[in-house]
Image (cartoon, rainbow, N blue to C red; front, side, top):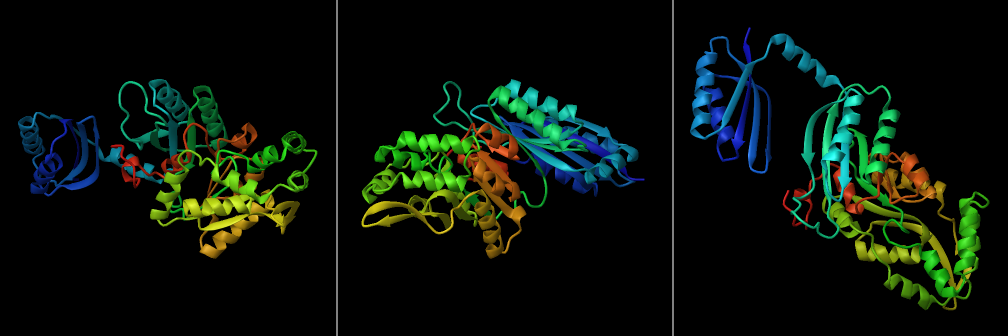
Length: 409
């Protein structure tokens, strides 16, 4: 039976290490069963699991590798792997794989300790850890800094709900975001991203801004509170609030549109998605007037929102057409997926409110963004610490691959 040798090389990173070790193994006609390499702060760690022919002199092989390592001031560790141990390792490849993503302004040892303790307590084994964010300088953090570490874990997870719940508790205690996904074929094969608008793509609730200008801010807020208490459904409360805007000049809409603040990371996220070939949509319970404004500014493909009726240059107090509520958002998401010829598992939905939950629940990746507590608890994923472009981390993209990012990964 052929021999199996595990070779580990570590030391200062330098060109030609992998090439040199591979050449030595090639001379002995070895097969590579597994290989992995990482570099942290110019320090290399290279591991190779090699199958050696029966006629290979293992002592001579390790001697040749040791001489190569000594010449480059590298450290070598080698050990023989039994066929039984290798067989058990091969059998493990059928186990489910999961991705846990840690998002914060900076990464601390306490965060890593708490997260990995939860992973270990549920019997999962961490196969790999990868930093997706750029390098962070010492001293005071730069404005809107981003830090992200991705854990790849494998194993049986009998109670995924309990695991997710414990991660959520850790995230709340440490004021970080923790995403948990199964590592399947859809994760890197999303094709459509649908966004809520108010308090998601923009840092405002437009109807509140309009109500303030119209002098009916308190009345609109009171109706909103009734809706939140469940005394009014979304459509009923929305019509009541819009009715209070009657007589507001169209110029007020222009003023609010000009002053809209785009949410942190939104422009970077959408420009990157477009370069990667994704389609984007706004599915909003707000107004088409403002959604069209964002469409032009950000390059959004589809827009569905509520048509605010304008008569003689002023708001009539009515809505034209079907109101886009939670159920309508989910319906539109299904419709867009069908038009694009994709599975709902290839869709990402992002929103902050309760009326976003229907579309978040049917999307392959539903993200509650800076959402209310109830929405965060109900959605599978949530982001509150970073900007919208943190969604790229959930897709597995590193800062080094984000177009227009200067940080060095």
